[in-house]
Image 1: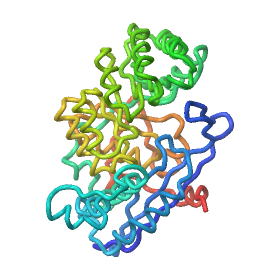
Image 2: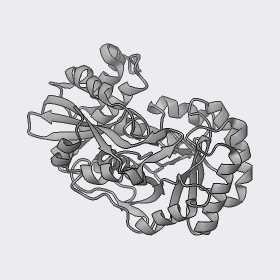
Image 3: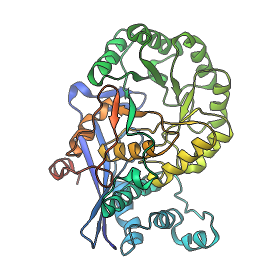
Length: 388
């Protein structure tokens, strides 16, 4: 089999006025993603998903251009089932032959950022193709499922102190969730406002629902440590990105000061970033995003690191059906996989892109058992929301 064409499409889905999100990232009035499509001479097509920002906002035109004009020439004519080799070609660029001959990386300058998100989308599409060519779901190719269903948590929680309880209870009722995540940090203005919101959430939810909190890396180390002290009685399931994702040393300080588990990794690239987190003892939970970290190939390497350091794996899932499916396959196959994020703000993209419904029932989601990623793209949806 040979790759005949590699394409990328920017999809932009406007938020209805009553679902516009406002947080430390500002006002997000749309959901954006990059749909990657790889065609072959065998008549099979693989699909993947990449994104220009963690939160699915922003302009994706650069990402589309990079995939179409830089990665496509490298991939066309190649055997798509040689996924590890193609990953090295994309990551190492013109020095890939040195890397493959010597058994170590010679990465191009773009070993982080938009280049790796482009690689992530392509990598997902290659795994989708491999599964389709063999008639099996991707998790079978990753070693088989450790679990057929994944526990899921509802991700959202932007409301103020007076409304946060009702907002989170709405998530619980919608999908039977027994775990929810809310945002804290700079969006609240000060530490104690975040503390009051968390206390209000715990009071509304009672003891039967886990609460995770996500600061998007906006607290200082001192603020994060104070926050942990103030919410100690709320029994949080984890505290996500308490400080900047670049401040691994500071994150380790926060972790050493509290028994609240620390989660991180949604904006990190490749196993090398996650190895540094592990060696610094900065996190309890790894959260790679399959549309950012390097795709399924790199996601499994990160999962192996989590297992080696006795850490949990809980992939970040802000995006559409393809990246959700990719994270599900990795989490199902990895022994370290524990729980899946189900992002309330991404519903139109997650449910509209695919003909299949990837939904949560009784707080759990089934792993797709169809060939490849198990996602059938709705081409009418793609045509409707294509930019340019």
